[in-house]
Image (cartoon, rainbow over all chains, first blue to last red; front, side, top):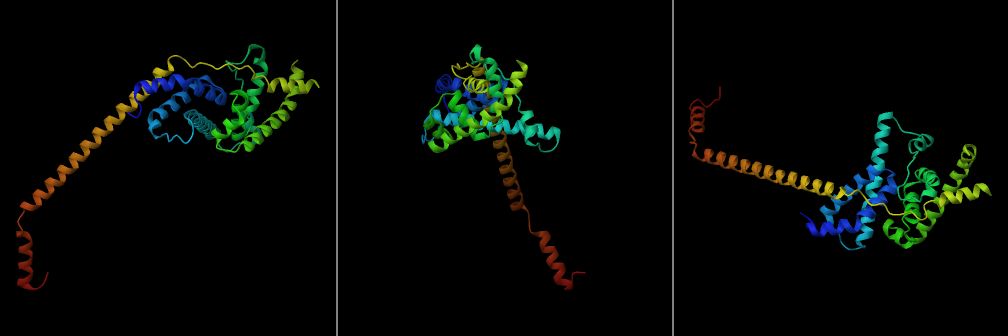
Length: 182
Length: 88
């Protein structure tokens, strides 16, 4: 056994909320977030002794969680592709990624708008989505995000800027729909 | 103007988000998976050890049986060849 029981319990108590929330923001599903949290802690249990302290434990756990989420999404998309046969074009992928996710941590008055936000976040590229979620939803600073993503601070700034620009463009297209509904 | 306000409201809708606590049973699910992994790994260790023991004992048996055999069959062939000086 790589990690003793009390160490592991302490580790879980300290980081389970972090892991679960990152996974929840990323995957937008309570069940998937629970599955990823389990996978992350299984990996931590197996490989905590290999942690080389080149970064902080928190940064390392963030990286493991994000990588697990990305792998999970890729696996899910490849399964969808397998069942429907053939590669999808951009519009079809956007349709597949449509989400009606109601984040349980969002304030009641923001619920409706947050559904729109989480829906279009899925249309961003991997790095833009990661940078945007860590910045806007997790509330991390740009230097913290840079360490997690192994990028320079300026690259993170530009990723967040581009993500916001894309989101604004997509939202301006959605605004007409919103006005018609109203 | 209205569009801009709406866009900004949507982008800022994650403000004030609270952290969600995972299900209380999640930890026991993880511990369960760890114990299953450990059980599986010890099973494989025993299987590997048993296979290795069988392999070693088979090798020892073959070596011992080869040592006790006589060279008679080979000698018979050699003598029959040298008598007639031809194989057929």
